[in-house]
Length: 164
Image 1 (tube, helix red, strand yellow):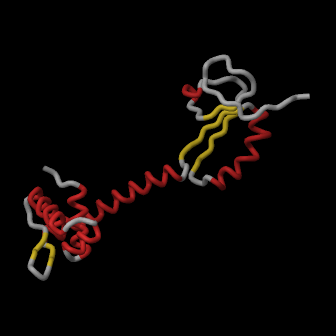
Image 2 (tube, one colour):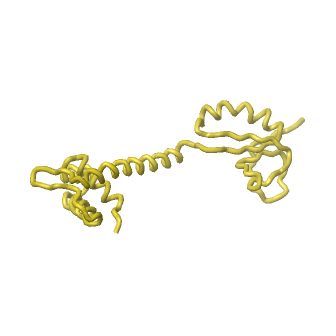
Image 3 (cartoon, helix red, strand yellow):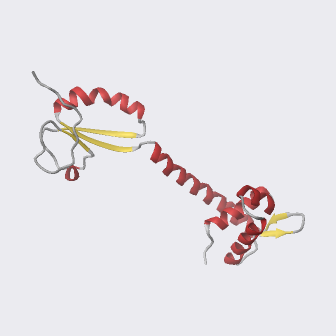
């Protein structure tokens, strides 16, 4: 059986805090649960990670090596999770927009600078064309056109202009 990320996190918390009781308090778990998790981890790995006495806790040689590596692994896991969470709150990536030339020149171009200032993690790709396009074939996220669609493509009116 392989070690679980929870067992590893508990082991690292024990080492960083210097005791089972402080780790249990930090993790919101019972002392016995923390102790069992570390024993289970040691059993799975087939080595003793900690030297235990009634008053002191220290790492074995194997424990020292394992601790250093697992500390990095846990930091990387936290960083990866934070990155994903940040991606959900901070738009990033490529936005591909295809618009008719008048729309591009008069409406979109003035918005490019404010867009880039507001969304610095976004890359904007603007293409001007006059024909209706297949968004999937052209790998376009948004197409802005004037007129009526001839097919069942999803569309939403963004503005109505009356020419006099």
